[in-house]
Length: 492
Ligand SMILES: *Cc1c(COP(=O)(O)O)cnc(C)c1O
Image 1 (tube, rainbow, N blue to C red):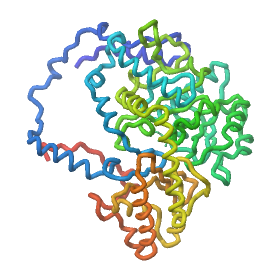
Image 2 (cartoon, rainbow, N blue to C red):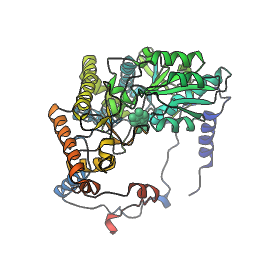
Image 3 (cartoon, rainbow, N blue to C red):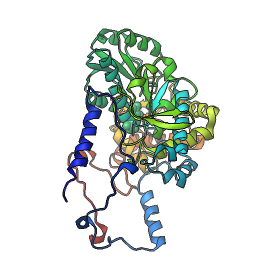
Image 4 (cartoon, helix red, strand yellow):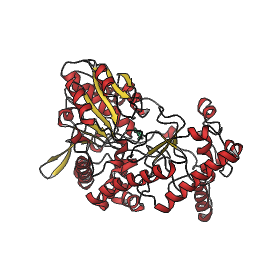
């Protein structure tokens, strides 16, 4: 097929203008009205109908039901994956997102025809600003990691606007792996600081590293050990005094709803994982959403387009010369915005507060009940997750991996293991608010049983799991020798 050189050229020109430093404004993408009529060239059109399997409805249903039970998911059983907030997602939110008036929209529609959808985005933005205590927000980023990246680009734009070139971002050694990755992607160097003996940020180490090279600090609060950074106000002041900005990795927001707000703590930006805290099923590689809430000083750098109100009409503002550009085609993963707002509206402010209270109570219940058997890493009340070390079991010759694999035989998804990296034989358990006391008690019993097995029959654990569709996998081998192929059922 002959390339359409003109449209390719104008597309690349658009990208160039988005990334060009001396830019003056952004062009909105073409609207359907401005596009030429388009027909697929004859040589690209299909000659024969596709070979689709024809099966009975009952066969199709059984196929998918059986598939769905071959993997672990939150609708099947307990899934206490730390830092990931695998909570139950009420089905009503999926139903609302699937309403034809939402699911049938096209991002190409002129704003005047989708006022209801834009109002929903506005309402969700307001709710998230209330939850975070921030001034402005973008709903574009498609994951927590992309939210981090977006905010770091805004940090960079902020410093450059002031004529400063700053080169480093500081993180603690308990940081989630996405933090250093986002920092490098945004063109900064990573300075990693050791945590203190309480598992918190080491203030003295922070003071020593702060200078005019530091663009900012990224910190997770509560941190990945499940502890609230009690010196957060001091930490933020120190970074601000050195001219840096402060980012909160808000993936653990499930511990803070209605209790404490990043904006009030003094943070300049934070992301929110809608797929963790605000009810979109995740873990299977599905869509994510990582809105970034910011303070006013960063607003001019927000990704375009920015939603604004023109009289009674919602419109998209593309004319923002200091914007970092777009980070997602269109406006983010809209279906998740619908779910999040449905969840927030059905719970209300008090309901959100109850989420975090119960998430914290559940985590502390597990911490207390399991601490005689599993070594607790820092013996202090925790927030949404309890972090243990498998050292007691290692002494019996059983590793944390073996405990994790054995849990699968009892129908429970393993917790996060070997993270944060600073905890030896780490088991990071996040029960969330959506589990009953009965489920937590069963889990405690299973964990105690596994510890007894470690004493009596350690070899049994080393070859677990026994009851899953596939047995123990060579995960490192699979990652190093990727074998991805399309399975053609029709020709198999
Ligand atoms: C999940 C998580 C992230 C990254 O979020 P994604 O949506 O998976 O990109 C970042 N930080 C922490 C602490 C997390 O738990």
